[in-house]
Image 1 (spheres, rainbow, N blue to C red):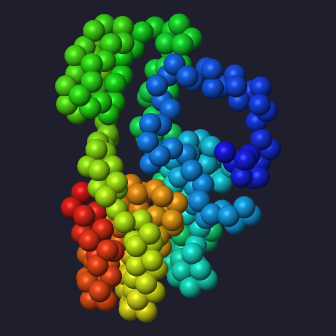
Image 2 (image 1 turned 135 degrees about the horizontal axis):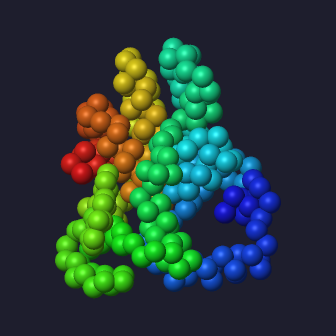
Length: 255
């Protein structure tokens, strides 16, 4: 995808076909758009990168992350730079990015599944690790019947830090994307004018990131940012009468 975006050289068609053939039986190809790898923006001015492998973001952007968004405008950039200067951290990502979700590859929910598939595919010792299953029967080696949300099954199975996203996906599917994009821009400008505390600046940044996600049709990511924007964003949205945005923030806060 980075090659298609013109940021690195592209993979050859033959190699792409070879990789597709390798991963086809894995069952790891995203079923819904919210889980798919995506780039938002315009050629030469890409604004956000979502659902990339953390090892890829580290190799090409120097940070282990699942989501990275650039600044919406110079005002937000100046706010982020001031926070970075105040904290005085080496190689602070805020000098370049408005929002970044840190995620080491060992914390990635897909990593154990990829590891398992590679072991099975390469005829290594059998292991069983099943994540994020909803009302399905899973047969991998030994037979297990799984009903409802399940993080791990089988001998010595272990699951940590898993999040079940069914409610997020349902809420995202009900969003008014066009209306929300317009109102989030209005809300962002109003919040920026009222911002006093550092927490206010962070809320403004999250509203901007939600706006980017909505424009990229990434509803789940937008909800994550709206939830992070917090109660002050909800309060301002109600005060200025952006009802679509206020409703979306309220739903996000309840998730």
